[in-house]
Structures are given as C-alpha cells and as structure tokens.
Length: 120
Length: 109
Image 1 (cartoon, chains in turn purple, green):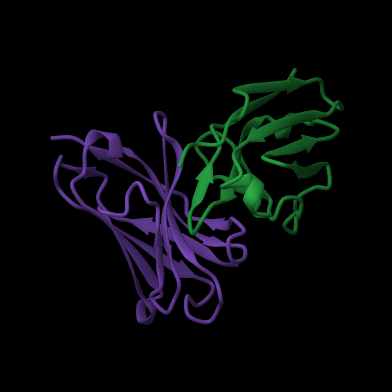
Image 2 (cartoon, one colour):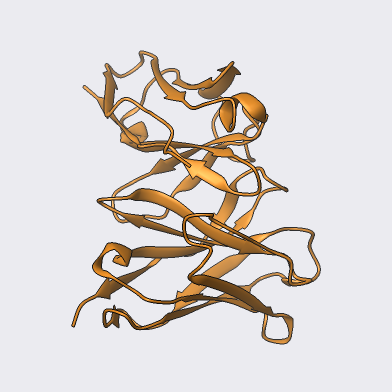
C-alpha cells in the first residue's frame, strides 16, 4: 500500500522560506507514471493546489504561487520536496503531499498533513 | 483562478439522497472532463470519492455518484448514512493546474 509522509518545521518566521519533504513508501516515485503534488488547506483559503512534479523533473505550479514555489524530486531517496519563499501569515496552513490517480484526474493518495504556522 | 462555488451546507435524513452542486466556468469544469470530489472528516486528509467526473476509485461505495452539465458538476449521496457526515470538496483540472471548491458540510439529520 502506497504511503506518503510529510516532514519539516511546524513553525516558520515571516519572510523566511518553508522547506517540506514528502517521503514515499510502498512504491517507487520513478516506476509509476504519475504526478506527485503539494496541496494546502487553511480556514481562510480552503483547499489549494500548490504544484506537482513528475519523476523526470517536469513541474507545474499554481499561477498564484509560481513566483515563490519550487518543487523538486530526489528519486534515489524516493522523496519530493517543496520550497515556498517569502512566507507570510497567509501561508499558515496544513500542507499535504499527494499522488494523482491519473494525469489531471485528482489525488488518490494523501499524506496525513503537517501544520505549518508562520509567526515571529 | 477563482474557487469553484459550492453551497456551504446540505443535509438529509438517513436513507435519503443528498446532492451537492459545484459551479465553475468554461475554463475549468466546462472545459475538461477532469472533475473530482473529495470527502474529508475532521482532522483527516481528504479522500478521493470521484474522479474524471463520474468514476469511483476502488472501495468507494456505489451510493456515491456524480455528473457534469456545462459549467456545473454534481455529487449525489444516495441512502445517506451517518458516516457520510463530512465536508465535501469538488475540484477541477484547469490549464495545467487544479482549482478546488469552497466546500460543503453534509449532515445526516
């Protein structure tokens, strides 16, 4: 059974960069033809798609976040990562990593989520 | 990109049917057959219930069905059960990204 687990700091200061990693177990990132993604959820902004990456490194980003987001993949570690720069209080959210059920078709596998709070 | 519009709440008696609407535009729902629906219980990650407008992933009961007409998608829960009480979100692919709905809280009265 495929499992995803987010890891990273729970507290980030304003203007700093958030770095999160998603570790995949029960399957290989590079052996399946799926996009792997980052999403977040906050009371104020609801569910929001941040971006996704294919094992080859091809990425797609939410246009509203594109200038601040970088998603990368490390196939040797079966991980993919998120960097979000210039964090503000509006970026406080539960961050999830996930895997698509098929190209463009939605996310069938989700991590448990990790709460990231932006505060000094 | 604007969020897809869903009613804040919907309810029904156990055994009845509840239908949730999700309204978008021709740039998202109306332009692609890539509408998905998620169920979310408090403190849990969303769970995919429907993908590609009307397909159910393995393990999702056939009480859950969905459709699309123009710029509006709908999810119907038939034979409402207590465990169906949750928040439901629609989502649509839209030009190399995804947009989500505002969410609907479903209650079994």
